[in-house]
Image (cartoon, rainbow, N blue to C red; front, side, top):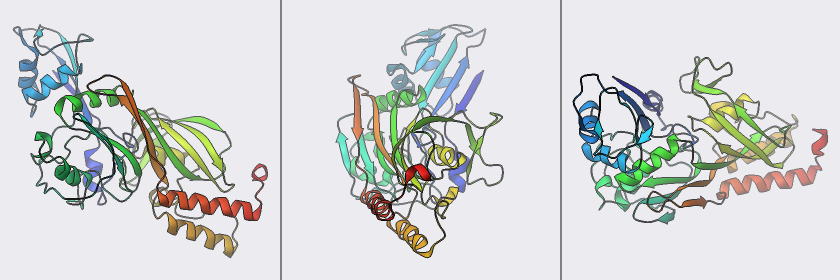
Length: 366
């Protein structure tokens, strides 16, 4: 018997024309899946890798072996090698990177901002506006197309795999750091770390309103909105959706908006965007969750013009994936990468700095 949980929302991807990605790993749902297998009573002893290749559809033996090498296969709660002989009623748990999706990927010579690269991983500082992988309405110009050109001599990137090397993703209009695996072993290792929630992810966001607390935690299940299937929704009573936790800390107050740092404990679709909106603090200029309107401040024309000018400076949700940390797939040592705020984000913060100083906002009075 096989129980399968997919940790990615394909249906949302098919519906979304601009290529929905995620906060956390996504910024959002990580790109792996989890299988739980109970060995039948009458099963004869068989190598673990052979058994799983037979039982799991569209899964190669090499892929299974890479998962075992990365300690991603547990039998009765303990990691086992490919050579382990399965026994009747064994409980097997396996985490695999998301299965390959074939598509005609034509490598494109798109410049990439590479923060780090070795034989196992490549760390990218993604610009806002770039979709991570192909989807409806985005069949070229994606990060995967760029990687397929940059890494065209590697097997993983020369087979037309639409999600080659990906273990997480961030929204099209979110900027910041992504890690991509360059081989099967690294792919399996990173997928397991995302599954175990041991990846360190830190984002910077500009949100509407003056948040009362200096720091806090938002906990609320996230799932597809029952009213708008292109939006995510917080099910506060935990009746639906997936468990989601976002920790936040105020970095700077501008009176009508607040700069916050968000640390993801889980990675759900649009997690930061929907959690902050649920708390009454949608991201500045986040059209999907209502942040592209003047939500705080006066009705005076000068203020209205000021906010509209800010929107023009950062014509996207004000969210940047600043830091990413994980155990290196080969060395096992913890590595962490940082990314400076992009110019559009810096420009809008400078504008709010100037405005608050000019009008002499009393933060305690707002």
